[in-house]
Image (cartoon, rainbow, N blue to C red; front, top):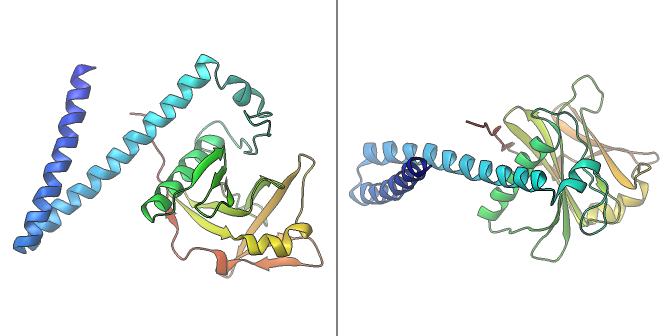
Length: 238
């Protein structure tokens, strides 16, 4: 363990050193060295991010094993705030809650870098700087269905919704539906027996659509869709 910690500390020290080398190369206009160093830094920072995410996942597993979070994990019924956990467990491998946490984490990290800090209220729900609750939900892609993405959030528990629709094994398409969208369409949207609003998303001719019962029908939500997919690589236990 000491050797592993020593190696990791050395790795972090090398990152700091590389930052200094990149700054010096930029000042001296040494283009080749700058490109080489920044490429190494990019790969190193990606590895550091993966390491931190794995530590977070390990912490969750420890909590589950110790029984502190066992009830919510086992039943999916009640959280500490008395609310039902809304994530659907699609599978036991890289889908379901594990993958949802990865992609949600990637989105939160990206937003933090942009200065948009989202504070966790409970699983899948976060407060933004304006005091609005943002529900962040994920779905893998089922190409056999007319609506490849099926997502859900608890009715009355959010003001805005971020839909993370997986389009490849390494990326999700982000659809951010603002409060104004729900002010207009919330009453018409489908709900299941558990009190969750359903988001059935489809893509046709390069545009994204959300299925809302008649008389609204299919609603084009491309204007709420980010132009570039969010990269969300699978974390691997190594």
